[in-house]
Length: 281
Length: 295
Image: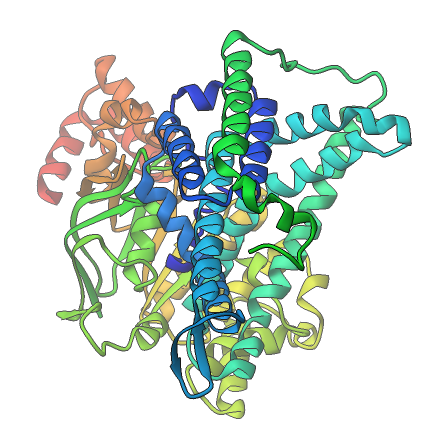
């Protein structure tokens, strides 16, 4: 179905690029670093720097920008609401007003700031998911969270659950598509009617979908047991994660970017406002 | 009714790094009381093709006509089309959802706007056609055996009174006996209800026995569109695309290569093959004359 195909966010995009080959841990750390930087930066040169970093990050990944923007469609509503709320509900110096609706100077500033941050955040993190297979991603998370095992956090089990859940998304989507088509072949209608009718019309889709999800879960559990899966203890990896030179280079680049973003990205005069919201601005 | 494909192309995901050409320039027609076999190995585009037949997929380019009306023209009622062109998906038992068998089979006719009584009448009729006894009508479809579930699912499509019935691998995952049951059920529907059949399969044997015409697909293209005998005569080309002609056809062609002449190498069923061989061994000239008479 067209509507299911539009969800490109979080999908893997197969290609051969430097970013695809990077160690998944590096990609997770770079993504986190980039997100943090977006909330540290507050000046225009800072955003230009972030844009430059993002541009490089996307270009090197060789994922077509058009493909990435298609994934943005699904978050457009969220973005739109954020902008509207910030635009109208921020108190401050009046810029334009129609009756009770007031756009303030601060509103414009914060709304555009939020919009830029959100767009950058989504694009930046989607590069990670576009270039990393879910398995590699969970491997990375497991490896990065390893220290938590000392606190008796079941890191391996969490990672395994995550990778299974991720692995099943495309399968369930395909299954949804198939069942939807099968029911449409029997005259089912998923597109018209009011919201209650539509919800009711979903029953012929959801019941078979749940049954098949349980069937698959059961089969998978059996298959894992048949291959003697018993959790993390003594488990080795087929492809252990090892840092290569390009990974160290990437870390270095990230560090450089973070330092720069604090230096030019922070309006040092207003730094105090971060800690004492009453004053400044 | 007659379905006609005119230069139909289908490309999945044109924006992806590797767009998939699922169908390439397909022109054909099906329906009109025929029994058509559609074969091709996994991924050859069979399922994509049949989903274009009832308007579940829209061609990227080209046109699908139902009785000379473009099914993607504005205001064409595709829901009504789906009732006339019944499509039974692979593993159709996975789409069962209702609390009892009868209600599940009623789903199709009810969606077409038929009244409860009419829908139940249609459902009962369809269930008796597929050989489900009345005692099972009030049972949960999930308590039935695999073969029964599949027959109930087929009844779910039959209850809409399709003029063309398309079955995508209807025997997949069934044991030989259930296979036989489903295939003879389909052939019975064709003969007694005069429903046009499109049987999708990768088993030549299944298709060979019943089809009047065989479509062979490979890599999104329709390679052959001929009567079974003519298709099986090309067993070498078929082998090249990963399909195996029925044993009978292979045996005859090997015998003819070994020097035993005088029979029709295109025979399809086991019985016909045995007859051909016996006749060829006893009076080669007689068979040769027969064949000329028949062709």
